[in-house]
Image (cartoon, rainbow, N blue to C red; front, side, top):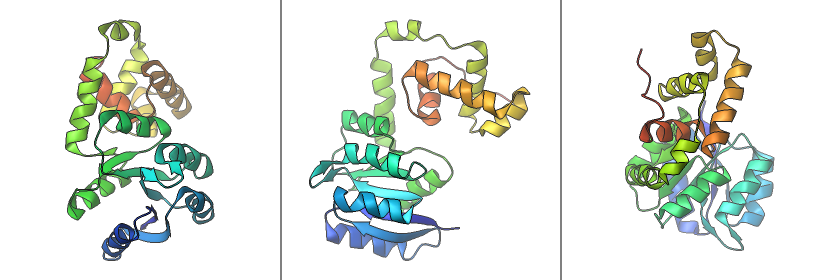
Amino acid sequence: MAWRVLLVDDHALFREGLAALFAYQTDFVVVGEADDAASALPLAQELKPDLILMDINLPGEDGIEVTRRLKEVVPTAAIVMLTVFDDTDTLLEAFKAGAQGYLVKNMRYGELLEQLRGLTRGEAVVSRRMAARILEEFQKWDKRMQSDIALTQRETEILELVTARLSNKEIAERLNISEYTVKNHIKSILRKLHLRSRHEAAAFGLARGLIRGYRP
């Protein structure tokens, strides 16, 4: 089934270029377009898209704040920010607001499609250069923070299985616990690490040496 896409960008030419690109794809279909936050919110609520591609600089309202509001209106939609800026602070703020991706507009169409198809498989969407910057930021954190992070043995086991891209159901079966218990442990992990997604937690855990990565 094709992912239903809502395009949000105040540059009509850019929107039309994306719409033309998706018109040739079988796994994505554009269901709507908006040029500002005021029109994007009601349109998202009406269309219930699977994916929202949104410029981070929208007229009238900051794209990060719009992301927070969109997640309230359509919590199941994946939001990918499009921007001409590749600064790390903005990227982290976008992820904290609920975005699942952050891509720079100067990338080629082929790379964009590759990244978005990764999103359909549950992967975070971010360019390789920005992914490297995220890890650098994690490594710059005060060492004292690491000593304050105390994952339980079970949380460590679960986070290692997350790095193997196992679903909650698969983790539950592997550890012989309920899926509900897995969800609660993951919530606890994210709270302790001050992160929003399991993908960020896995990357952080590996970068900081909190886990070894899954070994079958």
